[in-house]
Image (cartoon, rainbow, N blue to C red; front, top):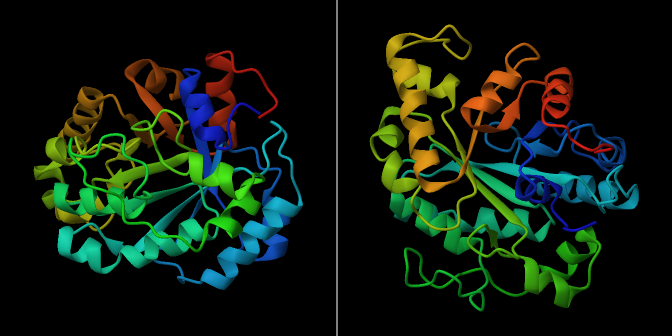
Length: 289
């Protein structure tokens, strides 16, 4: 195991990564999910219940049933949050969500409706301890995460508390960091600011969120292709912004188009196990997971 976070490890190796939903949030659900085919699992807390006891039990089930097939203590777990990234004030008021899920031992967070650079700056700062100073003064200020949750999180990661404090920082801003932060640029407001938003240090990946982006453009259900011109243009703009800042772009993939998507620069794939297997074969991924 080169890293705690398998998703980061693979991206550093030049390998695209693939995710799946986490399934039932319970201890038993964590036991079942521990041997997932996916490179990371998403715990959906945006519209699902913000059930921290269930998340805590799930993480403990993962840790008790490891290691994974790749030799990691648990799969990487990324959560969404109920709050939107509307602006700095909204994000500051809801930063408690960031500290709560990180204290449960998750490995990253995907911020929904990331509309403004101020919100993203507050998001990154909420995820960082103040003694991690890489990048401070260069787009982000001192971190605001406090002491108290590191012991429990360290046990989920399978490392000591001292080791957790050292590596629980945002990647790739801190090359030794193990926390994976992403953005959903999924409405017109977010799209209008995307170039500045993804420039905030500490972000590892972003997506264009076609379901919500479609609603923002007046469509009740435009999640799946073929896309209207305004939707295609939105995707192009988000991807271009990601490419300019060298952060990973997330997009839907299928077994038939995953190779083409990889060649175009997609580095995080949503599309299921069959598509992931096709992509891994295309990039000569060394298995098991």
